[in-house]
Length: 231
Ligand SMILES: C[S@@+](CC[C@H](N)C(=O)[O-])C[C@H]1O[C@@H](n2cnc3c(N)ncnc32)[C@H](O)[C@@H]1O
Image: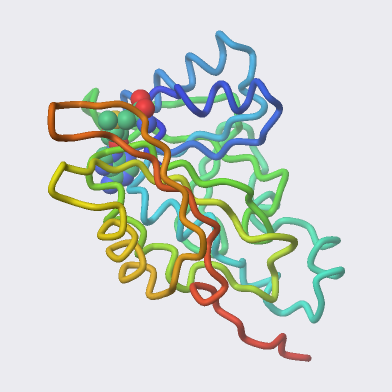
């Protein structure tokens, strides 16, 4: 969600993960793509330049064409509607399900105007992210925890295949704070109970403050559990 120039995205892609990497800063995304090129993993990394909440929402939205299908076997055989929207390598198109912009995976084109404007980022859906993702990495900013609300009702269980994703959210804990208070805050943002949260102490950043990574599996209660409608 906050990929920066790719210190997590590039190693994951090197391990053959398919990575959807996003950052709000266009310069970060530019260098992320350069790093992906240098490391020869650009086929495994799809880079986005948008706010992390919008990114997650759009990644997980079931396109309208897919939502009419009656069972998951039909869903898996249907063509990705976003993919269908790409008919020229460098042409930008809006997806059916919103305003996620698609261009060829290997082309990073700056928008007209000033240097610092958003860049058109690359999307080439080979997988259907609303059906399954394994891990979400939220490696800072310090406010990363506050973004957990995006997962509330994000996954539509009837389209999801396999186990729910693991969320890895970095945070800072001061000496007068506890891990329990972090979990409580995360639970209230998710509106669901977190089962078996795992804290990994990353490093001390000050005498009374340490950086942690809170990992947990997205709780079932945080998902939408509607029945499939038969048409
Ligand atoms: C401290 S950096 C960490 C970058 C990277 N995860 C790393 O470990 O190098 C935080 C990143 O979050 C990005 N960021 C901050 N707010 C954001 C938001 N609302 N949506 C997406 N990215 C954001 C910043 O642009 C920055 O690249």
